[in-house]
Length: 182
Image (cartoon, rainbow, N blue to C red; front, side):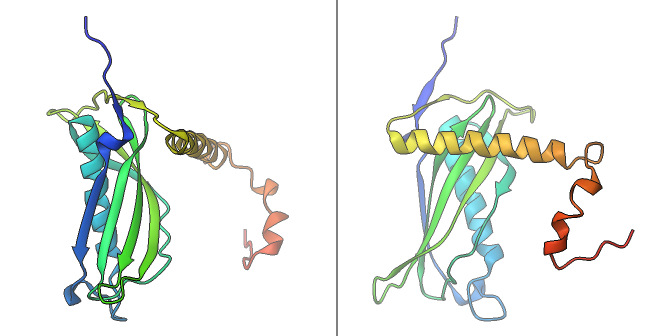
């Protein structure tokens, strides 16, 4: 008889730091957002795989707001850890900070949440360890993930093709820069 394994959020922590090179820039000379997203995905994969002990895939990314531009020559640090676990899914919370290596000044560039799913060798989803919540921040992050998952389910149902009722929204749209032409 097997017993369930539990791990702490600390057992999933990943810190990735990389120097921003000129080849990573967009047309305005700042670090390209797509490059940062790629680093974020790699970091989320690493945290989820470290926690689960399995290969993981990205199921979704919950909102990425680019708060501050990142400059060539800055060090970018991505910090990630598992905030929530389901049966085979995990939510990895991530914070991205850039640092000017000459002045030491740090900027919060973005935070995001990646939903990851553990897969076995045949590609089927596989059970992940349970999560030990060690402090109030762990509990807050876990509850935030539950709230986000529940809200996503409600939105998916409310705005599904079968359930959507246009007349419920036409009055609301008067406050927006939109014209309904049907």
